[in-house]
Image (cartoon, rainbow, N blue to C red; front, side):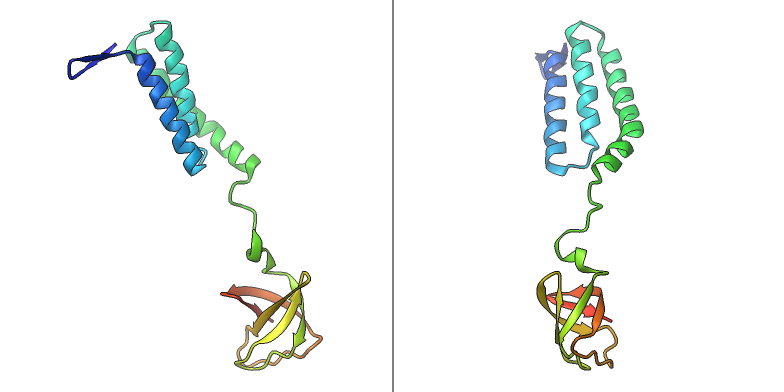
Length: 148
């Protein structure tokens, strides 16, 4: 039991609230960090249910949470590959495209990549790239591909 401002609160409720808060934070951030603290809080909750002392509960919570964080987070991040996949337009960088309309110095042309037509400019502003050429996509600026 914990007494705060004249109110007595069971540690079971405190650990339950902590676990719920950590789970909500993890759901919002998806950083695979606070989930380990939720696990620690659930183990501390079990200890509170079997009437283990508050000091032991806090120590087990901290030790277990930090050990889980240090030993398993990297494994799960690598397994889930969070944030490592190129998505949407970023996946076009490095791809080859076919020039449909000439790309001239300081003017855009048209290229086709993966079945879609895109406006493109040359990476070398003084270069001309003729229709029918194959180019490599170097970057994307707004809605234009930068090619060479």
